[in-house]
Amino acid sequence: MVKIIWTDIAKIDYWKNIEYLESDWTLQDVYNFIEKTDHLIELLTYQVSVTKQITLYYKVSEDSKIELLRFWNTYQNPKKFIF
Image 1: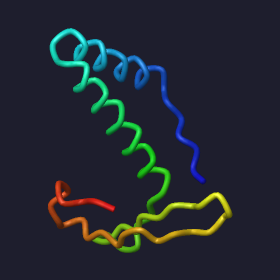
Image 2: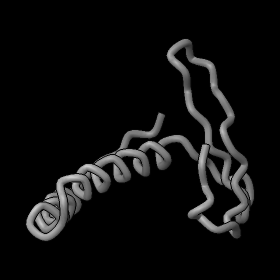
Image 3: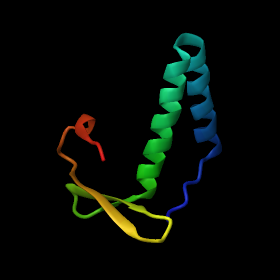
């Protein structure tokens, strides 16, 4: 698995965004941002480009099996992306 490394500036940006959401938005918006960020980081860890236009998303199970989740055409609307 790929290891995600946060730079110091990325950490600062992340927490500044959370502080902004806490002051100007709802607590639910804060939770949504955190959950979406966590989900996107997971996707970064578990994706590979098949071609320029196709990305394969997968996950590794606890028993070390690889489950292929999606072959996503990157020209599609990203709002329609679900597992």
